[in-house]
Structures are given as structure tokens and as C-alpha cells.
Length: 224
Length: 379
Image 1: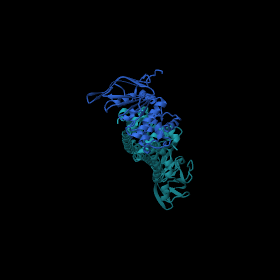
Image 2: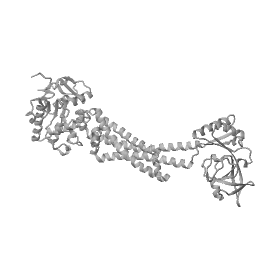
Image 3: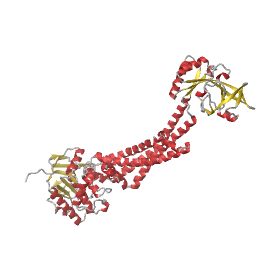
């Protein structure tokens, strides 16, 4: 096996917040990495810093100290514009509350990240992705006409439209019943296998850990 | 039907869908712009109609200059030399010296004291309603319209003035209200019929208003050089004043109209701010999946502008109807609303409407674009 560069890697990552004159250490020297084709879950009590870590990995927020590398490239000090571009190029997001645009159809929602790219192939690709997550018969439905599981599948298809190397999921099963949650996790497992994508999921749900390759536990900003 | 358009301009697709999400609210914000645009456009068109009405009443007198002796300086009449000086100053424009007198005329058995003008070439400045004006006028008389009516004079009638009889050659058109040499109640005779030696007025008929202006200035320069000798009356100065008045009136009316547009702008600002708050998470997601701030700004701004364009076009169409009604009422001709100087208020008002919307959308759009996605997505 060839030694590959991790898709995302942090070194000595520290995040401190100032709240009301007090300094809160959300992340305390975190070393974390995920390889392509690996499904990692981050678990821990609320306030443990797991969402903060996910935001760092997703380049939505910058660290106070330390370093983040995305596919080997140092992205710690990128400008807001460069980070946005890097997100678009490399990272897909799936959220607990799905966050679909209620005015757009399933296909249009999947197209959203590429709406401004003027690429005639986008629609066909969006339709293929929806077929792949089992929504081939719901292409023109609005989110209000879909069930929770179906919405999350649309969100997964959306996260894949830019062919990301890293998929970040924040409580992806949090709003779903157990059976639907299983189906979604199977979807993740399949994507990991077929697309060789690195997946990081932040979760409370012990069910998630049945599908992951590795579980990282965060307590008070420290991995254990 | 929008599919091609949506593909080309995804911003407006998202904007349109977002506006349709809160239909009533969007429609009300739009209505504000409609009212504002109608206010500006129809008040502007109203001003233009008033101006037209006023200038119609004044007639086309802007190209005449009337020179009179300055009686306050003791000058009672203009001499032949004055006339020659004026002719030189007028530089090729038509110069008509006028003698005047008041005398009794006899028509049949009726007698009346009337204003007499003696002119060599009245055809240069007056038009005949009935009959023709000989150019030059060597014999016969011309009668003003109201005098002709009062004394029942027609072409071919004979009138007697100071013991001489004249055949009426023409009845004149009504003159301009402001003209100091107004023919309406006067009789115009050949110059030699008036015994006085000097002239009471000299009319200069210029090609254009500007030429009239230049002539007036040149006459002042040459005749009033050493001491004031003549008063120079430019009819164009009156039309200028009237025109200035209507320009100010129009600006005032449009100013009033703008207030309603300002109110519309505030309502768009409000609607857009509500929308950014409600859609905070969506905007956060868009930022997360790789939308640059600039693109969010574009989408939000497109929503505001779309409200302005839709409202503005509706307002402009309604204003066109209003303009036709205004022109029908004031000028008895609805089609006069289609003159370019009237129609120009439609794009102006539309432009104001769209600009107001864009400016009102700017702050909410900026706010939405600069929201940190981490904050927006916090559960």
C-alpha cells in the first residue's frame, strides 16, 4: 500500500473563545487526521468541542493556534475567500437539520453548490446522484413533499455534487428515526467505499459507531 | 417558460423563488414601488401637460423683439435714424417700424375710437384669418379680430378713418396676449396713412429665439450706449420665465413623488431584513457549500432589484394610462401623452424605482453576505 497523504490533518490545534472576559478553551492541542476511504466519528458530551472541531475541519472557522492541512496543503491562514473556494473544491457538508432551500426542487437543491458555475452537465449529474441515493422518483419534489430521510438523502446528494474528498456530517441521524438513520449511514458507508471519500461525522448517536472505522472521543477539548 | 432564462441567470431564479415564498409580503413591498413610480411619473407627466397648456396659450412669440422709445427718459418717438440703427443691429432679421395713433373710425353708421397702427409690411408678423395681407401694404386696411367682431367688419367692408376711406383687405388672426403691438382691437393701415413723423415701436422678427436675444442685446448696445433711449422688450424673456417656472414646478412635483418612493424603499429594506433573518441558516449553508460573500450579496440584491423592476414596470404602465387621462383632461387629447418629453418620465420613474430598491437592498444583502456561516449554522 502506498503511503498516502491524509485528506485532512490537524496538528496542535487550539481554539480559544473570549466570552464575557473569560477565556474558554474549546479545543486543546488536537492532533487528528482522516485518510481517504475512512469513516471516522467524533463523539463526546455537548460542549466538548466536537462541533468546533468539525467547523475547523470544514474551514468554516479558523484555529487560534496550530495547523490544518487539507490534502497536504496548509490551509490554516487562508483568506476568507480562499477558504470558501477550498470548501467548494474539497468539502461536502451534511447537517442535522438538512438545510435544504424550501423553494427549490430536489434536483435544484442538489445543484445549489454549482448554481453559478454555468455547467450544462450539472443537472444530469444532480439527477444521477439523486438516483444513486434512491430518490430517482422524487426529482421534482420540493423539500416540504419529502420525508426526513428523503431530505437527508437530498442533502447527501448535494454534498457530493462537487465530488468532494472530505464529507463532514453534523449529527446526520439526529433528526431521523432509527430505521431511517440506518439507511443514511449505509449510504455514507457506500459513498466511502465507492468514492474513496473521507467522512467525519459528529454524533451523539451510538448507532453511527457501528458503521465507522474509528471513533474519536472528545472531552473538554481533548481527545482520548 | 423561464427555463432558459433560469439557466443563464441562476441568481434571478433563486431570487424569484425566494420572493414567491412570501408572496403577500413581496407583493406589498412591490406595491410600494408601484405607488412611488406612479407618483413620480404621473406628477412629471402632469407638469409636462401643464407646461404644454400654458405655452399653447402663449403662442409662438419667442422670436420677436419689440423696441419702444424710453418715455421715462423723455424720448417720445423713434426717428428714421433709430430705425436704421436697429436695422444694422438686427443684422438681416426682419425689421418692422410701427407708427401708432388713436383715432375715430366710422363703419357704416357706427363710430369707434380705436388704436391705429401704420406699418409697411404687417404680413411679416401677422397672419390673416380671412382675406390676404398684401406685402407690402400700400392701400387698404387690416382689422383685428375682436374689433372686426364688435363692429361687424368683414373683408371688403369700407371703413373711414380721419376722412379717408379704406377697403378692408383682411381680418387678422388673434394675436399673442403679451405682445405690446397687439392687433386684436386695432386697425392696421399703410405707414403713410399715419401723419406722425416718428415711430412708436419697431418690431424685429428674428429667425429663432436665440437670434432674437442677440438682436435685443445688439439694439441695447447701439441705442442705449450713451444714454437710455429705448426699451427693448423680448417676448422670449417671458417664455423663458414661464418655462423656468414650469421646470421648478416639475421638480417640485417630482420631489413630492420621490417621498412616496422613499417610503417604498424603507418597506423594501424592512422586507429584505426580515428575509435575511429568516433565511440565516440557508445563507449559512450556501456559504458553507462554497458560495462567496459576493455571490450571496448578488442573490440578495437581485431579490430587492427584482421587486423594484416588477413594481417599476407595473407602475410605469399604470402611469402611462394616468398620463393619457391627464392629457385628455388638460389638453383634450390623450395621445399627446405619447410625446417624448412626456414619455421620458416613465423611464425616469422606473429608474428611480429600481435604484431605490437596489439601495434599500444593499444593507440587508451586505449583512447576509457577512454573516459568519459558523454562527448561522449553530443549532
